[in-house]
Amino acid sequence: MRKKIVAGNWKMNNDLTQTEALLNDLRKQRKTSFAEVMVAPTFTNLWHAYEALRKADIEVIAQNMHFAENGAYTGEISASMLKTVGVNTVILGHSERRAYFYETEEMLAKKVDTALAHKMRVIFCFGEELKDRKSENHFNIVESQIKGSLFHLKAEDWKSIVLAYEPVWAIGTGETASPEQAQEMHAFIRKTIASAYGEEIAQNVSILYGGSVKPDNAAEIFSKPDVDGGLIGGASLKAGDFFAIVNAI
Image (cartoon, rainbow, N blue to C red; front, side, top):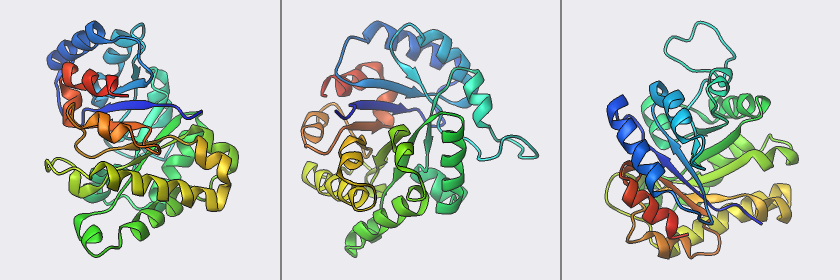
C-alpha cells in the first residue's frame, strides 16, 4: 500500500526565532493522521528542528544537497552532513533549483545516486512551465524529466523514491491545477513508470502534488486515486493551515 505523505517545504523563510515558534506550534497541533508528516527548514535550522521534533512524529528533511561527498564546493551541503544531524530524506529537483541554479537532469541523477548511496529517501520534483502546458507539451516535459534523472535506477532503488509533481505555473501564483488535471498527470506518471519498471513498482511509488495546495482545496485534490499527498510551500509556514492540509488526507 502506498504511503500518504504531506511535506512542508519552508524554502528560504524563518530565522531561528521564527523557526522555534513554528516548531512549537507544530508540536502542539500534531495529532495522529493517515499521513507521514515532514517539514524542510533551512539548513541552518535543521539540527534545531530535528531536536525539537524528534518525539513529535514529524520528520525533518532537507531542501537540497550536493552530489559530491566533500571538496571545494563553497556553500554546499553533503549527504553525510545531513545524515549526522538526523536528516534521512532530501528534496531534489525542485523547480526553483532548476530555474535559478540551472540544475540539469544529469546533475540531478548524480544527486539521486548520492542520496541513495547514503540510504536516504528522495522526494524528487518535476513539472512543466506554463508555456509547456499551453503548447500541450506538458506530458513530454514531465516524461523527459523523470526518465532523465531516474530511469537509470535499479528496481529496488524505487522503494526510496517519492515523486512530487509540481506544475511550475501553479507555484506561488495562486493558480492551482484542477483536481482533474492533477489526477490526469499523476496517472500518466504512474503509467510511465510502469512502462519501464512494471505495474507493481508503479503502484507502490507515492506521488505527491505540489502546486498551491491550501486548506480549502486539499481534500478535493487528495481525493483523486493517484494523488498520495502534497509537497506544500507557503501554507506550511502556518501550523494551523499545514495541519488542516494534513488532516485532509
